[in-house]
Image 1 (tube, each protein chain N blue to C red):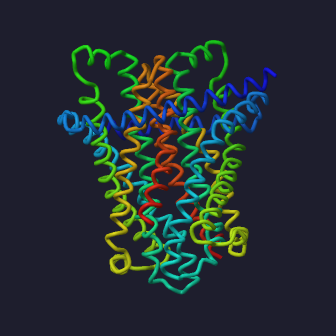
Image 2: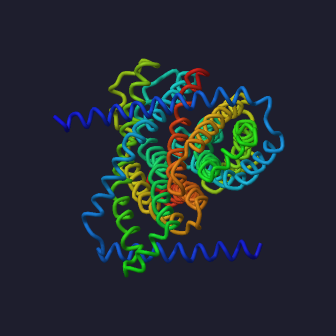
Image 3: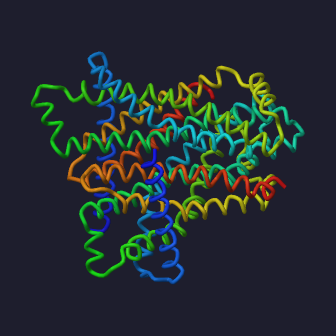
Length: 253
Length: 258
């Protein structure tokens, strides 16, 4: 028990140190622009097809499920589109999109940094007088801060379009209702944007930490990837809960 | 000219790889179904303990927060309609049927599926699987079939744990944010939620467990290229598991009609 507490304390200390160091370096703009742009391109390029596939299916499923209930309980599909857009903007696009990105981007970062750690490339960087956090973590953080919100917007769009087609084909709901923004308030948009940006700040740091603390051997990389996915997923759900509590007055009017 | 040729070649390579993966997954699934009667029972118990018992706290915690999130998301609608009585239904209906199984599936693939790929991948890379074959032990009997059965069973069990966590989270949040007594919440929920809703979620998660098991075993056995290869396999496995979850979810939803 004592050992567990001590390990958790040590890991939180190391993680906090990594977060502070990464943000200090980020705000001092200590990074090469070309590296950041390449990272951003790779993150986006790697995730676009994945996000498009998964979020389209999520959109189909959500509209099917809510459509069956709306038909059974109210018999009226006029609120299906506007309500779906509202829930998508303030909850499901950021959260489910970020959970998907946690498996794609998070696992990717952890696998990359983890393999560099076990093959002692990180130590080699230190030997050359380069700071691993500055060289490896900060560009990924900067790239994610831009790309994760962008990909979440894309995720919402794909879910919206897929949902629109599902509603048209299964329940014969006209396309036009999926362009009605009458339920959407600025509060919903603010909450969704805050969540998207927060997740963009968390995914790279949690998974980079998991990758950098990989232990030696071929099992180490796998374990680091697992930890990255799990820890990012938990952080996303927890932050989502926290944002919902703190910003409840904003979106509930 | 060469640019266009390069693009066509890349598209073709991707399509061939996709077809090969899909075929490999199907073959693995059929082989697993055939080997289930011969599976190693001790391996099954060990795998179930490792997959299920050790993930339960994380799943319960995540589900607790998910229940809370769903209450806060449905509260504005319920307040607008002046129908506080509907809060337990609004918060737990979608959680039990849809959101719970999907999120638990994603967590399960992240923890258990990727762990499984890493383990099998390490065994392949260090030639332990070949050693098993050399000893005339079928890796499917000893490694794959027990894990498949354990993952399906544990995914269902973990969804029960998750459902409990989500209901408790919803109750606590409803008490804190809407002032609804916990006893009243449970009573209303018993009137509004049917056993069929619960069963639908559990059936779904059983299918998710099967999908995650097949995907993670396939990528584990296909690992090549040392420690870096294991990392790559794990990465590919979690991504493919996430895709398989949403595809299976869609198929089950369409077939069961919600």
